[in-house]
Each structure stands twice: as C-alpha cells, then as structure tokens.
Image (cartoon, rainbow, N blue to C red; front, top):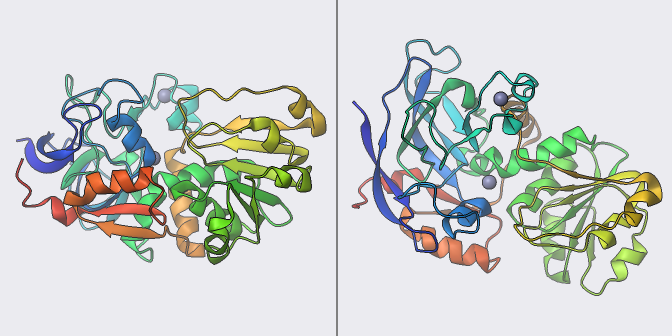
Length: 355
Ligand code: ZN
Ligand code: ZN
C-alpha cells in the first residue's frame, strides 16, 4: 500500500508553497524508506518553484534535495542500508546506471538524463513524478542513498547533500590542496561551504564579494584573505594570482574580470546556477592558458567520499533551523540574502500539517 505523507509544495509556479499530501510508493526490493529528519533549502528549489526553470513538472511539486533521515524500512534485496541507519539523499534519485558516465561514477551526467529527487518522471513508478524532501518521509533506491556519518550533526549535515558536494567535487577534480590558491566568489550557501571545504583540503582561500560587508564573516569561516570587488580595483591587484576560482554566484558576473585573476594554467569553475547568459571573451582565456569549467553537484560515490571527508575534517554548514510553516518566509529571506548560510527545515514539523 502506498503511504500518504504530509508535505509542503507548490500548486502553481510563482505562488507560495502550501501544505499538501503526497503518496510515497511501496518499498520495492531495492528501495529504502526514510523518515526525514531535516531538509535544507537550496536556491534551485526556488528556481523550480518560481518558474525560472519553466512550468512546474507536476502539481503539486514538493521540492527539497538536501535530505537527512533515518531508514525505517528496507526492501528484501537491500544490502547497503539497515533500519535505523542515518542516511542522506541529494539531488538525484536514480539514473540509467549503464551509460559511460554512470559507469564512471558520474551519475549526475547520465547520458539518458538522471532522475532528480523531485520533479522527474519516476522510473520506479510509471506515470508518477518524484517528490522531494519537504515532507515527512521518502522512498528511494538504495544505490542513491548515502550513509551519513554519525559524528556529523545531522541538521548541519543536510546542506552537504547538495551545496557540499557541489563545491567539493570541482575542488577535488581541480586539485585544491596545500600550495594552491583558491578564490571563492560569493558567500552564500554554496560559498561558505566552498571556503570550509577548500580550507579542509589545505588550500589558501580568498573570498571575493562585492562589498566589504562579509569580511568578518569570511574570516570566521576560516578564509585567509578577503577582497571586495565592487570598485574593480581587486581585479588589477589580484591579477594572475589564483589557481582556482570557484564561482558560486547565481547571477551573471563579468567573466573577463575574474579570468584575469587566474595564474598560469588556472581554472575558473562555475557552480552557481543562473538562467541568464554570461558572455565569454576568448582573450582572457588565452592569456596564462586558462580554463573555464562547469560542474553539476556530484556522483553517488563521491558524495559518500565528501560526507566521510566532512566527518573527518568536521565540516558542516552554518544553518538556521525552521519549521515547515516558515518555508515561504525563508524563500523571501534567501532572495534578500538574509540567511547565514542555509535554512534547514525540521522534518518533524510536517507531521500534523493539514492540507
Ligand atoms: Zn541544490
Ligand atoms: Zn546513465
């Protein structure tokens, strides 16, 4: 019997979210059922809900892809998880598992298209769409559920499932570490974890932000240096400086200005999502043999690796815990950059909601 659970979702793009009920499918042989303890609020949840990624794929749409919870039931063939385990689910809930990219452990780049944890047609249930973590419970294939180390604070670990892996994967791929200089552009949900992860990897970290207002906050997160870019002088002063620039800003920036700060063979990586174009001149790329790269969250194995790394180095998000009824206010505050640095919803507050 499918289970009806309380959730918070959008009936229409651009409208506030409201209490809803959704059906969770039966636990199949390879599935686990998870009681959701916490779910982070990521900027891309808002992109789906406000319509900037297009019409809602399903109505109601329940967002949420930074999920931490406890396993409450396992399918008959499940081997990776047991009832009671602390686990997480991030952006993906499935992929083809057969294409070159899936076999390379990069399921996020599945050539047949990955299944998002919400808003995707659900291969496990023809005709249905996946629904996300703003809810009491979820059912997902065991291979897309990762183990959350018990030493991590589960509420502060939730944002690692999207924001954490989104910054960890490219920092790892481009070898951030001792002796490298990393700049993090923007100090929001992604950026603050970018600083912590890059520091934990041993890099020298500079935060680049428009004004001086986040200087102290950057230092508190462990950043070695800070530069305000608003008046443009930083682009000259820091020309040819960084090995890596991690752009976490979810709005267009002047790529030529930032590329100019890369030293020999340096790489700028975009992880912030914007639907606006960002013009790219080739000349700043030619100088110093620079590269410009993108990165989309991460594969399942590297998400597990990231969580283990986070536990070893004590990296978690700085969060503000809210109840389900505060989600719409949280969205407004995120748009006003009024959060340090991630809202996380207390999963227990979905219980007792009436749709
Ligand atoms: Zn996200
Ligand atoms: Zn695939």
